[in-house]
Picture 1: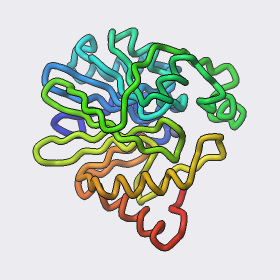
Picture 2: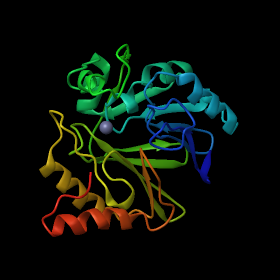
Picture 3: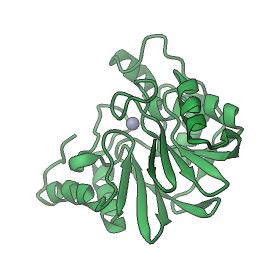
Length: 243
Ligand SMILES: [Zn+2]
């Protein structure tokens, strides 16, 4: 599903567009003209559906060089092992996420809690895989495009958004940091942190993206900053944005 000259959606479950396994977050494919990358990897329950969607774009999956994880929760990182293997791509994430995903630390990833909460089936198996650590502010080239890593915690530790510029427009892959209508995602898990979340909203407000591409729900192809402003409006009134 092509949404932009340089961006396709190749995975998305029930919280998005229903084109792959229902538990998958939205998986974006970035076209750097000859070199490609994925943002997130879905849950890993039916990675073949994501691979099929990649094939439908006409892009050779072997030209996908990297998979950038926004964070380690199962719906984002569970498919990293299968997709990185199928595409011979490296997986990258902020240091904490890299550690949790590469060691398959189910506690740190809150996967046991998510299974108990009914978010995944009881037999959900998480596949660990090697993940290269990224630093906040690091810039990585994907063909003729450049992604900037932004440490944006609050939803969980090691959460990153990725900023990209194209045609004078700022594009933000916002992960689970900020969603449509200015919603955020607070969860009763060990590493969810309201103070860090507020800091994240301030950082994202400064960036003022034109295009906002969250990992769940609708996206915004212009004035992407309006959703971030909506969250900040609540914060400025000392209220917690809707979760
Ligand atoms: Zn999450």
